[in-house]
Image (tube, rainbow, N blue to C red; front, top):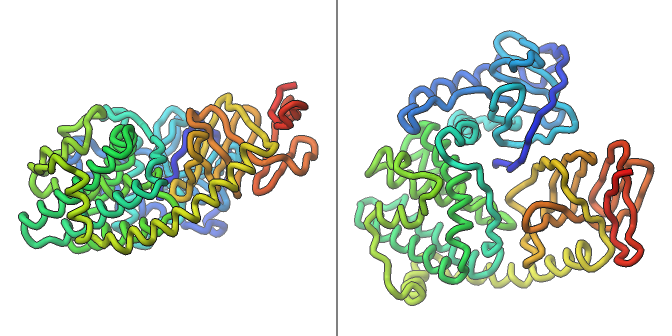
Length: 430
């Protein structure tokens, strides 16, 4: 799963790395690069560009880097037909695209899947992000907090159940029937939450199109492709939250089904395209003028009884989780950290919307001018991403501060102080 990260700069420390000390052999890494190189060349038609380019494969345990080419500054060292180095601890590791050493790279965390097609899928996904700006698509990840609410989750799950049936349908009439249902549930959701259409569209144009690209480049057979998508959706349903991960499973289905009718449809869209409107028109779908009535009449065909039952249980549970986070990160004394030049990595599948206060990321790693923050039990990111809050500091030992489920290592000239009025803490520059 792709971990979103904002990395303005990467610093690498090169060192001699001998093959007998590597968990991943140069020959294995070379094989990964070559199989993706071949798949990318076979699918140049998709975007009229070769997705194969600079790639950094990184072992998150040892921070060892395996690259398919050298950097302009010659920081990486050649070993056989790959290049190696060690990533500085000040740099976050994630599946993403990064600018470093005069080149733009796709960064992917090891280990890769044992399945060749799945490996290519991931490498193509991140490589799309690498070339994304040149294709005219902005890098844009938006939170969709309405998908942490009961009706938002119910309608999304119904949409995905309908998409599953569209994939399995044996004729175009049935495909269109299930697509109509899917887009009905989606459009009804947009009516419930005024900003949902724009916020979902932003993530689908970014992660959704990237995952569609990865899926198409992977060269699976039709059966392999359908099985992969169906398993992905069923696994997705088990995620604690859908806020930032739904697009990996919606856009690829619409895109794949449309590619069977219009092979290069993706070349018709821009970063201004409203994908829902585009798909409705492209599939020639006629939606009801009464979306609530239509959604209600259709839902029983898509496992609605189980979905609604499960979401009622979750709603009660999430209310308790939200209340606990509010006490810990808002109401009680806490440490609020303002960003200067932030870089962050996190897991998009387990975040929690905290009403209008922002979003809680149970796990994340942030680097900034002030140092490194590692979170393992929840941090609150502000709505406009200019600051983060963690629980009250418990241990302060010089430049190392820790609290419940988090650690902060400050650089020289930075320290924390407590406001005597609010009792909250903040980082100050000495």
